[in-house]
Length: 258
Image 1: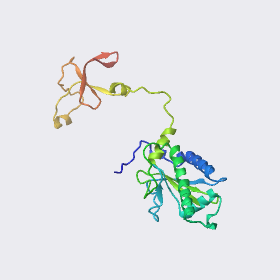
Image 2: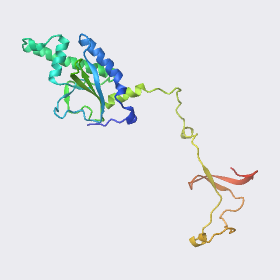
Image 3: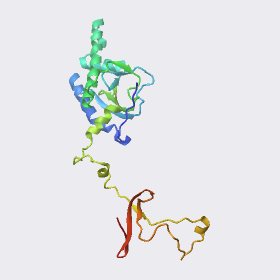
Image 4: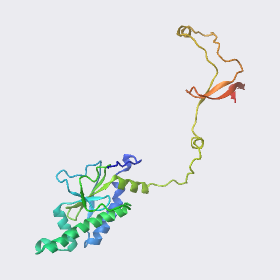
């Protein structure tokens, strides 16, 4: 079953820049661990609504662990492995065991990068996804696509960070409230500062449309409420009477006494 990931962040909060710093830091650490000298840099970051699949390759993306996927062309993977070994394997006479070991190193290089990224973005718990193909790692909610290149500007690999990985990282960078807020004990407390306009219903009278049209200055309407009788108090534009009050006069104003 596929469950859509939802979050409360506005779309403008999810930008490539919010993941650039941790991504660049992880790539630099990974590069220093496996290669002599500078090797990999992040050149392209973009938001994807769920279109990470390369149309020419349905199996290019691989999920090595839990959430972050990676893809690369075979030639780029060979160059990366050669750089890690500091040799050009095309010039070597390799037997089947050698090729198996080089392939294992190739997988380990990518897997280690993904492990470091997931650790940096707080992806913990659960079982590893294993090395498996995925058609589109960003299909469920989108996310961020990043491209790594070598010093010559040639692509090394691409990584896809799903929205459910990016959003918790963004939330962790938001400034917390300066003062802890105590949870309201009741709805009255929670909405106690909301301003409300009230009105007093002095009385009513029933007229026909013709009588209403004939009204003129000086006409007297008899209401259904006696002088001095309590009037109903309602919230403005509401017919629900929540209190009774008596109309009185204070100086030049009309007041209600509850």
